[in-house]
Image (cartoon, rainbow, N blue to C red):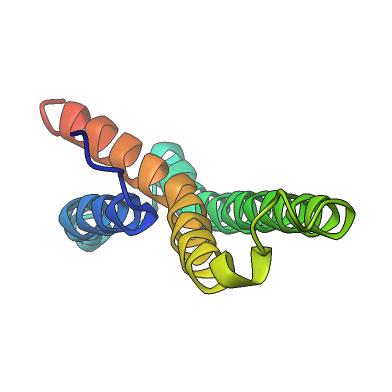
Length: 134
């Protein structure tokens, strides 16, 4: 029998990937800042500006992803409730599943919220590794 993937598994994968990549990106950028020329080059200024804008973008995208997940869960809960109100003899009571559904939704929402940050960190790590050889 195939086991059902839990939403917290996705959250754990996102957290581990972020925990492995982020320190490497921070170390690389810190070293670059420390070794920067006194009058900073245009490339260095673009990199530092990128650090700021990508954090804002990742935060915004993460919040929107969490809001979409929670809104979808609310819609599913409402549909379950309406179905039970119309046919309580055929549909199981949605309140019995509510704690598990809330836990699953929280795990999925947090994983979706971390996704944009993890993708940006992974992209930065690839890009910074390529530019080391230059």
